[in-house]
Image 1 (cartoon, rainbow, N blue to C red):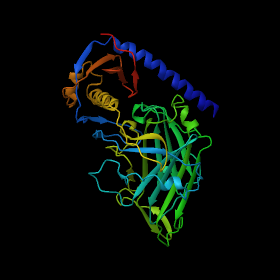
Image 2 (image 1 turned 120 degrees about the vertical axis):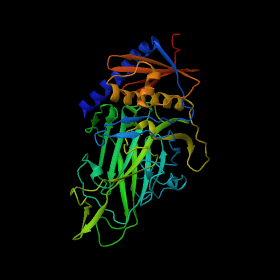
Image 3 (image 1 turned 45 degrees about the vertical axis):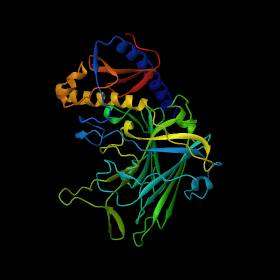
Amino acid sequence: MWMINWFIKIELTVIKMRKRKFSAMVMSALTIASFSCMQMRSVSTVNTNDGFRDKQEIISEFAPLHYVCYKAVSPLTIDGVLEESSWDKVPWTEPFQDIRGGEYPAPTYETKVKMLWDDRYFYVAARLEEPHVHGKIVKRDAVIYRDNDFEVFIDPDGDTHLYYELEVNALNTFWDLLLVKPYRDGGPAINGFDTKDIQTAVFVDGTLNDPSDLDRCWYVEIAIPLKALAQINNNDRPSEGKQWRVNFSRVQWHTDIRNGVYVKRQNRNTGKPLPEENWVWSPQGVVNMHRPETWGFVQFSELIAGTGTVNFKFAPEEKVKWMLRNVYYAQRKYFSKFKEYAADVSLLVKAGFVAHPLPYKVKLQKSWGSYVAAIETEDGHWFINNKGFIWKEYTRMIK
């Protein structure tokens, strides 16, 4: 554990050093181009490699879902039953969709989530409709998604680097890990990370691993310690109006019952299991959960659940961040085609990227094997680099 904490501290230090270095590079940028995305949509494609997929994929429209997370009336008992009054006083999310979006077939079974928080924990409860609740994996930190599972993804500071993942199956076996950065940007995953004081529970409305009858659903209840997340968030805890990037996923395998046992359905030609279904709260646009920039928004409120409501407020800076993300997508496509990054935003048209007039200018600095792009706004400027890391500086750029 000490080596993992040491690794995390080193990575945080490197990220801070990168911020200072890249800011200086961009301030001396030579290329300025007008660029727009008022409709927040890119028609570029990127060649992704997240460890599971490697193909040309279309970038989705920027339309993350959102949820206001209220404080629990009192600490919750994590047993999967959801009997506390706090759970009764907060709404479920929208039912999950296909990971690619609403234009694809709706999931066979309904999945939905509730969230709460207090001074110690971020709470998540999920209800997964399922006529045959089953699971096999009993070892912690095994690859849980090889069973049907429920997954949580959290990027507290929204920079797409150093984020948290948790997977739980119907046996309440879980896998908790950190991603230094998305797989597409080189990872790695820190599988040895253990979330101290985490609590998870599963309640099955039916009978577990019994193919002879039909079940109704299974519930997952989770308490993730804020202290554990603080080490990847500069100890910036939830407060009124604070927003985290969060998403939830359900992996569902096609199964058959053979000789009283659940088995994965196979492709008759290859003999391999059919691909799993991926159902999520906020669609990703592609079959890849490791795109933190398309996760949903969770906005925290200090109000006690049931005592009032607040409206979700979309931060204007998120549009600026998405503009830079479009440059990042286009640069990946450009690099795939020309084996180098573009030195001018206008060159990205060669990669099939379409730009529109914008109220902001993009400064682009290319160096050997890397680049930094920046947009200056009224209250500072935003940066993104070739690894997809995004950050803000509050000082104004040199003219």
